[in-house]
Image: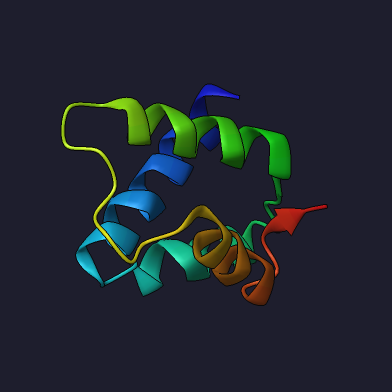
Length: 75
């Protein structure tokens, strides 16, 4: 779970900055890694509660949609 959480945090950081790492996405697809939706939501909420919060216009649902599109979210 710790490794998955680290990957999710990396993807969230990229999402916040507007440039999700395509290399990381490709590596996750190649490893056929799928993130449990509950873990994604939990990690998102932890990031949102940090000092900087989530920038306006960036929603958890948008992030989850990207993971679904990339076929790395376990529903």
